[in-house]
Length: 77
Image (cartoon, rainbow, N blue to C red):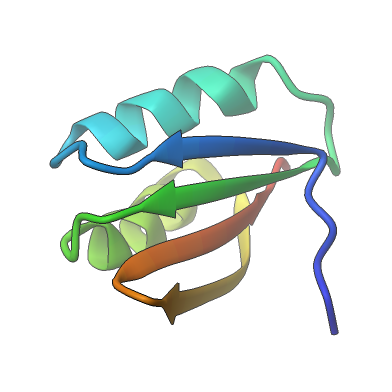
């Protein structure tokens, strides 16, 4: 199933905790049910994104790795 994001946040080149900080700021501007695509190059962001979603109640719909970049699809709760 293809996930169609409402917005994309490119956090490439940023290291922990910046991808999560920027994700939180972006999610805060979005409506409930909307999907944010986050692109990151930090391998630590895989665990960070799962932990952040669990903590905040936002839903991680999908995560994948493509060509050294990590893509996360987060649905705002």
